[in-house]
Length: 474
Image (cartoon, rainbow, N blue to C red; front, side, top):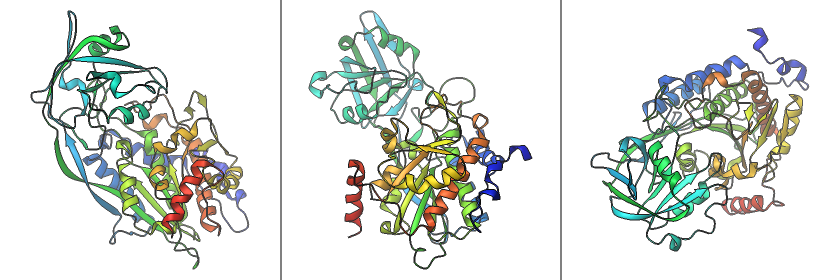
């Protein structure tokens, strides 16, 4: 449909003989609708659905004649540890006075680090009402009790979880009203929050709501077998568009996105698949179209396109790549990671023709992208609170090895985030095409600039990562 094209991307934006990349909304929709389809079952790491997504990405690289840098192939295969929490013999009982709640294994996700046998341990309730909840809480405050976490919608809990998961407690429980995709008996990456049990039970939520905050009179009884650890395989998918400039072709700009998601729900009614359309089939689709645009041109620097597995489980695939790079890290000029580019109903606002970067001031990448953004009449800006998301995506793994990096997003919170309702039909593809066209032009601009992006040492975080960069290049 001609009206579905983004006319702003036509040749009127060309500079000299340079032709601006054109990205079609229907091309992006085709990628997202497949990756987020029921057939791929939510692309959990590891799963057959994830493998199918990897094959799709590799076939696109092959179709567009990207170099295959891993022994002549596109797959960087990693041996990963996976964990299954047996449901047999499991029992979890909450009691307070005459009230008693049996929470079945079918209503629990997560895993324990070892077998558990808890008889009537006291319960300490912590209400996670804001980002600073539990900041002053110590292991001694709980004194042998089980910790029951009650989150509030929209409040981030990652810092608190990192803190308490290292404590020696009888158990750590969290009330979670969402459907889940990692129930007992399911194979999951072994790194995912071992020691935390999420209770997807209305009865458990009602029980917790009746308890006062702090030390309570409630008791926990828990029986669980030791988790079973096994080995499996997962794949980062990697392709290269080789640079044309003799002096720059051995320098690389990485364009990345994670292609995994949460799998399928173990409870609830309706469609069980966590489709992951905006998170992050949208980023993968953008990466594929940027790769296709770059392959038709001759960038001066080489472009390294990477689809990572295991982001949802703690940046596992990108951290694996950081330990096992296919090109020397000192030759990496920068990384642009792509996340959540399709929704415009984000962060309580309507974002049209605009995107932002995590760690906006950490690097000079924003200045490298500003010219192409203006050509496409796209607003590139620093969103309030965006620095907090720098460590939440695969750019963090590259920053940790010194590569100037950022994640590109339209926004961070959208109504269907990590829900089964994150489906392909809710994305704004004309808007997405405009942004992706801008990013394609921006990537090509970085590739031809003899001065690569750098960490900003006037920023404390930039200074920290610059020190890592300098150490690695010595």
